[in-house]
Image 1 (cartoon, rainbow, N blue to C red):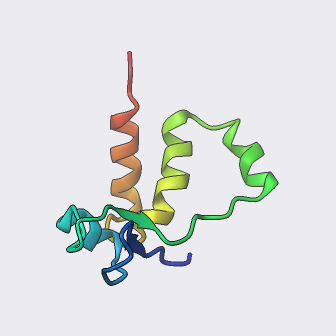
Image 2 (image 1 turned 30 degrees about the vertical axis):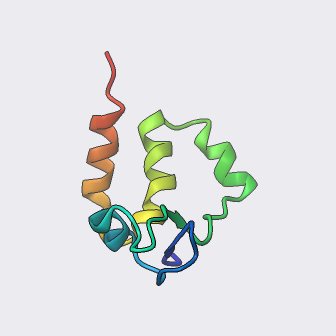
Image 3 (image 1 turned 90 degrees about the vertical axis):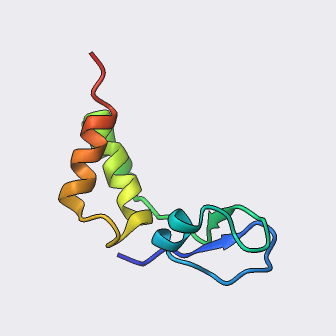
Length: 86
C-alpha cells in the first residue's frame, strides 16, 4: 500500500505523514493538511463495499490514509466502535 503524504493548503510547508499531520494539527504556514493523493478503488472494490457493514467500508478507506500509524486491527476496532449505533 502506497504511503499517502499530506501537504498544507498554503503550499509553504514540507510534506508530512498522517502521524505528523495529526500531531501538528495545523501546518506552520497556517494552512490545513490535505492528502497529496487519494487511494484508488477498483470497480470490484466498490461492488464489495455494498456488501460490507458501514464500519468495514470506513476501515477499507481510512487504512490508506493512516498507513502504519495505527495498526490495522486497532483501526478496525476504532471504526467498529465509532459506527456502532443502536
